[in-house]
Image (cartoon, rainbow, N blue to C red; front, top):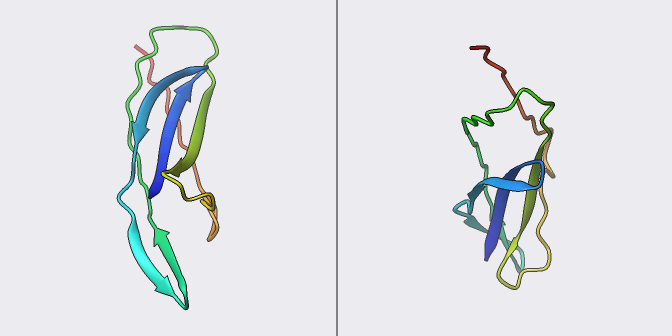
Length: 82
C-alpha cells in the first residue's frame, strides 16, 4: 500500500519516489498519511520552453488514494543562467 509521486518533463519521467507511509487508525479505517518533500535538480540542456508535471497514484490494491486534502501544494522552479 501507499502512493508514488513522479515528476515529468514533457512526457519524460525524470524522477520518481514511493514515499514511506505512516499508518493512522481512525475508527474502523486504516489511513496511511505522508508528507513528501522533493528537491530535484534538473539539467534539461535546452533553451526551449519546458513543461513540468507532477503525477501521483496508488500503489498496490488501495483504490482510495487522495492527494492534497489538507492544504495547498507548491512547486517552485528556478532557472539559473549560465
